[in-house]
Every structure is written in C-alpha cells, then in structure tokens.
Length: 164
Image (cartoon, rainbow, N blue to C red; front, side, top):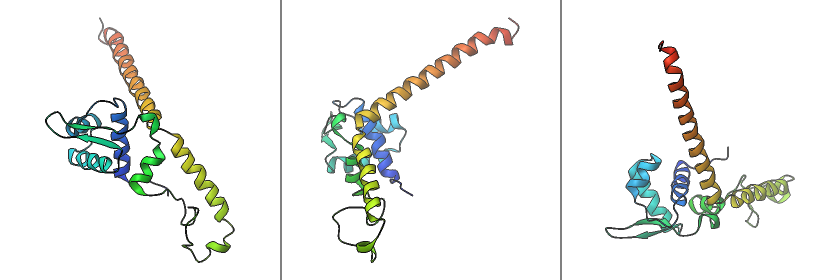
C-alpha cells in the first residue's frame, strides 16, 4: 500500500493551515489549537519543516514561523520528498538508480512501473499547497453553511414540535 507517514500527513496539515495566511508569523501553540494536533508534535514538525527549508523561523517574543515560499510555488510532491525521500511505488520504479533487485535488468514490468511512478509523482507535483488551501477553505465554508442551515431548520421546526 502506498502511504505517507502520519508525521508527513500532519506536516501537510500544518502547511495548509499556514498557507491560508502565508505572510503571517504563527506560533506552535496557535497552530496546535487551530489544527487540533498535539503541541509537542506541532513543535517538532515546525523545527523539521524549518530545517528542510519549507518554513522560516523568527526568534524572540514576537517570533514564530512562516512559509518560506508562496503556497502556489510549493508542490505536494516536493513536501513529501523532503520529508520522506523520493516517491517510489516499487523498488525499481525510480529511474537512474542502480539495480536493487536481481531481476531488474531483465524485468518485463520495470518500464511500465517507471511510467506509473512518473505519473504519480507528476500528479503530486502538480498539486500545490495553494490548491490544498483552497480545498480546505471550501470545506470550511461548506461545513459552516451546513451548520447554519441545520440551526435555521431546527429553529423553524421548534414551534411545530412543541405545539406553539
């Protein structure tokens, strides 16, 4: 199964949250509260993301973290590769590497796997942090709309349900 680690998933959640306000310094505590991720995990991920060059940190009383690039300049594939290494669907699907399998030189499916891997990596690269931010914002609006509609419907039904 192709799966990113939980820490990479959480890192992407943090980047998406930060991408909603890319120029603003944000602290670990507020990111933890807004994403509902544990503070120690958020603090650890912020340090990792800064070390990998995805975030810039500012020390001091008014310090915090901000994105190092604009959300539209940051591909999801780049984030995953920085945190987990090159994306490979099979041992031999990364082109240009030395054979890691005794059958690799004569393997009849290596070419198709490389093609599939290229398509997968390309898809990840073509999805930017800005795309993820836009999707998250749309989901928040949909959730708020649904909550408002439920409240309005409940308020409209209350008199009928209570004989008023």
